[in-house]
Image (cartoon, rainbow, N blue to C red):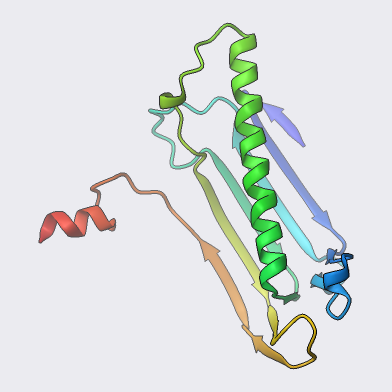
Length: 170
């Protein structure tokens, strides 16, 4: 981890990852996310600490991640819990940002914010998704997705490649 020129860089490797559902609902499919291999994850995270709303940078934060083979068991309940967790995490992060601004004497103007632009570069080798028919049945649909790579970019409203650009052309 390093902090240079008011920016964070975090690089690392994880040996393995396992996310388990230890609730009564996860008795038949307790392991929801599992990696294989001795080095399951390599990651590199970069964050501009003081992003400017009018900044000309392409992103506020960059996440590069290479995963070994992963297995994911999808249930609606688990997806809902994970989504709720990240929504609450983002709300708490915004609250802390407002507290810091107020403590430093800056104006906390809710109209002067936007979400973070997080650039993703993620690759996963041989992801397998299992979708049970029900959390109480052993019938499962399994999909081997081969190699997956996810990358994104951010475009300004009205620029080529956006929906607003296509609507203007009509």
